[in-house]
Image (cartoon, rainbow, N blue to C red; front, side, top):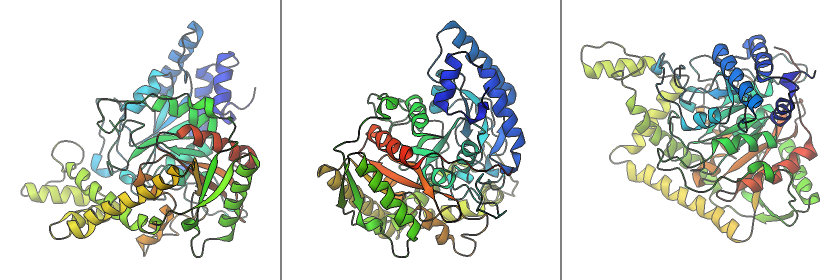
Length: 491
């Protein structure tokens, strides 16, 4: 029998349907792989008993012939998603050993469709970070290494545990969230596929909030088809989330392999940054050539407000974080540090419970929302956001079906190599991804090649609102042309 952990989700679905193996066998294979890969620190909580119980239930459903579309498929869940009866911490000390009494909408839909939960995955604290180094459980290791080097690299953030676990074959797919690139950047760093759907496509209910007008959940998986299968279960209207859009969820998998002939692909000139590595430029050109060879038409487009996206994002996101994180006060749940009065108790709890990056962003956010600065910073950033959105609308109005860009400005870097003295150095990792969140658009990252040191690089496709299907069709073209990459095992 093939090594069960090396199957794609689509292959595993077929094997389960053909009774080649059981969900329990598939789950056990992944639980063993997780145990052997603890050096990566991808999982912060393993749930083997629950996983086996869910696998047995899936096997019973498959035997009866009424299995859901994800029946028996073992998944990892980012520790930002509330899981009923299973500790959920957002990888922050301030939540302590918080155990939700409810299930997030997205995970409840995955369990409805028969998926199996292997455990909770590591992420940057409250999803604030681009390298998965801010987690209170410690950094996550990337399964990839530079050729001839033993340096442990970051898997990207904030969904680093999700990307690392999928790349290291510890789970068949994972839930993730994306506020400024936290699905697409880790996917690019680990040679996995990650899609951030249109804002409102997936419910945010039961997901620990970072920046409510930017956060959106999506899947990370090993292939474009696997991502399409997962998104179909994750997407859908939820009356519990007022930002969730009530429109039908298409059969995303049917879009994989569809012809892209005649599609117009925009190449934005503003994404050609000064000092951009030649290999990123070369990769971008290769991606454009693959799409052209598949029958797509390439057109240069302009997104003139791109240069303001990063500064505007780092005003809007911390402002919303400051507001959202005010609920962690030591009174209702999680950590509580004693004080002589309620103010001191608040201060002591937050000083002890929040990590340095979260404190930094809360302070920036509180500052930009304060009297006298609100108009100068927050209001102005929201106006810039409107202009960024209009840039994309103008492109799509001219018949552009999708936009092709690099996913990241470099390959993965070493743990501790960036952002130590200057946090802005780390923030620059989001340069190609934040525009998509600011405009609320869908974006997919697909592995497209390797750098000179053998590390994976990804390309990003940005689509029209609620047109994830086009991204799956185009993403498949890049995936077929570039091939799939797997890291050499060192852990």
